[in-house]
Image 1: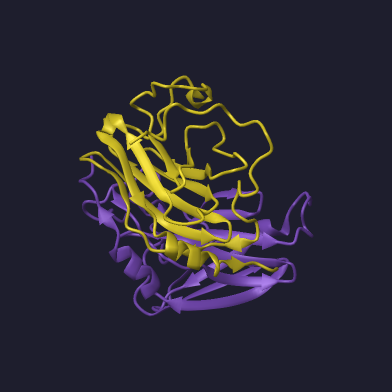
Image 2: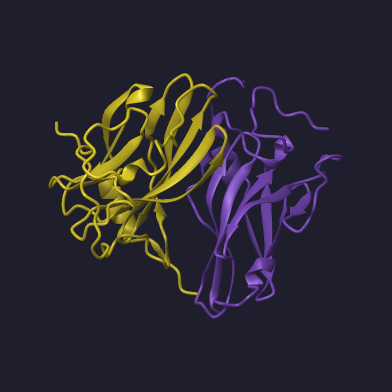
Length: 167
Length: 184
């Protein structure tokens, strides 16, 4: 099992890499990333905060309301994956075993969601330098790809501040 | 200087302000801000993600606290805020609000936020977190005609007396004109 980095405190009984440090103030990423669109729908990655170990962010959907009121919103099947410059890949549709193994690559973990309008995620670990590729699709949105420089996240993570030693 | 926090005004039951919520079809424009609201050996709170919208400003307060130190989510008997004209606020209550140069103000102490038609609005939006951490979003509806938006906060139990910091309002006004309008 992976040991948490020295001096970093995490909450609860979940694997440490599934959360964010609770003894750090995160750095902020001052931009929104457009992940994709389809007629009547636009999807953004926003509210991005960077810690020494991971990233948290929201995925927000703006919709013209055509799918409002559906019993099962196709938005609920949004899938996206993240590929780092070293070739490692993870996605929100890949499960993980909390008891047995450490994840082999980037993990996208869902925290919360609300009515298909937004979802909150943790991305672990931080990417290596280079290009980060995000692929996003849903039953109402064909796969789309966006790339950005990992420095966007790494520079923000470098701004995170350790507050105190773990309890 | 007169406190903006007491007395807590009567709740407003009329129609809400036209700027009571962030615009539904906008993503705000980021404006850098270095603002530490609380920093003690066991509690920290800073502002992150200051965003300019066409009708106001959003921001997030990132909280961290250690076991045994004040919890910013303290409530007395649940909805203590619902008590109108409260003049002696419990020291445990973290309060935050805004003051405009013309004397208008609004705070977090009003039930459901300040929604008066003549503004400004100050309203909590969503929050999330857990044991020892919390992220709370706020919305400031409206811009002053001139001068700065001043953020005001106070938390007696943590030794934080009423503190004021002007937001970079000229930058926010400029950024508000560039707020991203979403058109699916």
